[in-house]
Amino acid sequence: MDQLLIDLFSAYFSARKNKRNTIASLEFELNYEKEILKLYQEIKSGSYKISKSIIFIVHSPVQREIVASSFRDRVVHHLIFDYINPIFEPVFIYDSYSCRKNKGTFFGIKRIKKFIRICSNNYKKESYILKLDISGYFMSINKEILWNKVKNTLVKNKDKCGFDFYLILPLIKKIVFHNYTKNYIIRGNKDDWKGLPKSKSLFLSKNNCGLPIGNLTSQLFSNIYLNEFDHFVKRDLKFKFYGRYVDDFIIISNSKGKLKKSVYYIKKYLITELNLEINQKKIYLQSFKNGVSFLGVIIKPYRIYIKNRTKNNFYRKIISVNKKLKKMDIEKSDQLFLISSINSYLGLLKHYNTYNLKKKILIKNLKINNMEFDKSFYKIKFIN
Image (tube, rainbow, N blue to C red):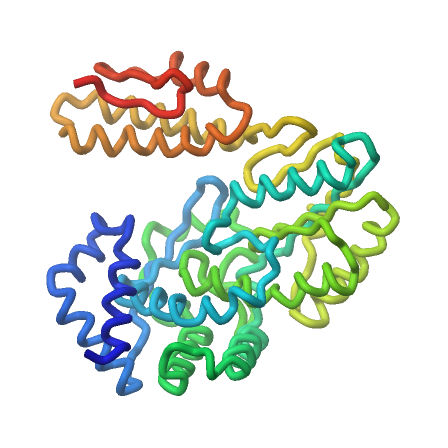
């Protein structure tokens, strides 16, 4: 069997994880061998075309425009990720946390907490935290710049590529330059876009700019786009304590003056090299004693707190689950699914100082028969 075909099957099984109950996944699964073979033939012949996407707005945790690719396109995204991520992983700095194996939000939070503790000599020495983010990051990514970064790195590592280089490179280019606003279906209505900043929509992005939030390839490409910037901060600006999650980045230093000066050089680098701009309203420079907001939590000396937005989302989830569980005809499988949605929040909260919060929210608000908490409020389950 051709290696590409084997890899497509592997990509399919990765794409359907946590998506197996979606309509798109189920439709593909009905004839998945036939569908994968069709994808294989299209890629081999160079005739593969990206399907229509569904574009919609979500309001939680913040208002965002989401582009949902078709399931067959998501299989291709996983194929590309599986092929090129091993090439880029070694060139990324250790402290970029998004879309990387064994990293993520919790890892990033722990690293920033550790940086603060080390830089401040266990909270005894004055240190400062500079936090910045990029205005409309995904919608501002320049596709020409991105493509050159992807192509140049792959060309340099052509001998290390475990795939047909000349077959896959044009496929990657097709994904990078695809204009999702030319072939799409809107889910919802136009009023959903009210209040969405112009910098957050693909429909209003500059010519040849913008990646869709939600695609696996977009997450990888966003890391590639800022990779050289990461090295610039550490190598040229000489900051040891630096971490980034997508477009949110934090620098910790004992010198407030050095951090202030660095803002100028960071702005200059981003605009001249990447056509990106710092969000002027979100420049944060404070003593470590004041703490810092990062990835949904507040990091302070000795403690990490959950932000109010996460608490409020948890409350809303419980209210929603209570309403659904009141239905007399709800099946046990649906009950378990609803409970698992609450347990996912508890899985997040257990990492932080939230015992009293969990106890208060669950005991006062969750009304489910035949239910028990574990002793640490890490999860709930039904009693048979």
